[in-house]
Image (cartoon, rainbow, N blue to C red; front, side):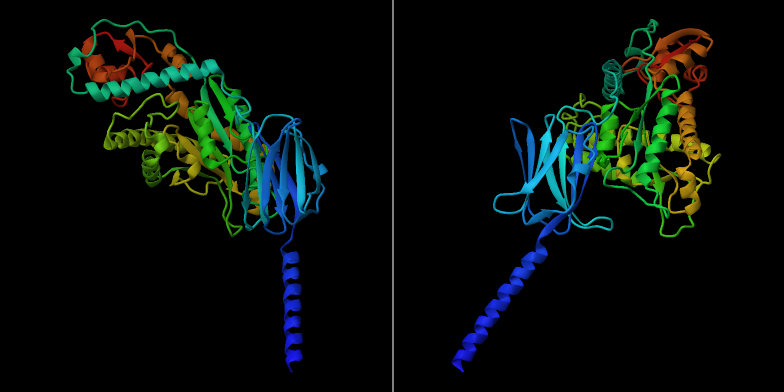
Length: 487
């Protein structure tokens, strides 16, 4: 009886050992595929894994290499098929690591800063290891803005900020004490281009929505974005900056950060809608919701990196450290409100133009808290060009003629707005000012000016000054040229 008990115990131990080995074998992973996307400022390499595994990533020098070790993993794909062109990777070698597991070695042709992370399965992919190769000092934009143009923008923005600070501190001073009485001659006009940041949604490992015939949103919107950029660049006084000009992914906040880095006057993000039913169709235009604006302002104020926050948000040269929390909130809310108003105005123009070539899903500009629109200083729109989930609309979204029509409609709406309200240092503002027949003297707005003070200074009624310059209110901008009517 005792021997039987011992034998049973041994059997149980052997069985437990067998099942443990089987469990280890089940948990062993394999690389089922590898995907690579090359961007101007980084490359992203994704390992599609059959199961989760541990990874160790480190760099070697002479020659430059990046080593990726995967525990309990084997290679079940051919890495030689990876599209290495335009990336920092010259070649890929694989082998069995000493002690077991898989070793992948990337031969490099440039300096990189690596980082990696794992992702759990979702609706489209299983377990993944993501390895990013970031290129220090490189811009994510293919054609960054010219440094001279950037300097002009910085000077204009700094002047506007100085004007805001001056108005806050001198608002109680009598107009007669604010400035000298002589007319200041206008300085040469910068005549800069109006910069439109064009963002194609999704990209890389994020295909976006997929239509019934397999059309990927990321491909369609990139084509429309490129066509829109051609429309913008083909028009005097405008310049396009493509946020994404290839099949790679850029983070949502990075997209607006890139637009800010390029001193964009406007940001437009192109997407294609989708729904569980194939019936919905038509284009939609979205601006940021007021609720989204409020929450974003609160986040900006709470962020330790932005406590010296900015009005305009471009280069951080305006410090708000000496302002209390309430005033900082008011200043950012005013900035956000102004850009929201511009976004809604431009959105209405774009929606009207889209309605001439496509059915509209919504007849007015919608407002929602899209992350990609949350920029306090740049008017922004998100445009859903159509429902890729609708078979008929999916077919039209693939049509180059329809893509061109959509891009032309979007730019027509943008151009119509900026022709009516051009930024003061832009070529369009200079052209508008020179088309007017002067009825008196000219005056270029300086830091600290207000419309009422200018009217008093030149001895003309405020209403007459508004009428001579087609102003609906008292909002003026530094650099703007006013016609001073003869009294």
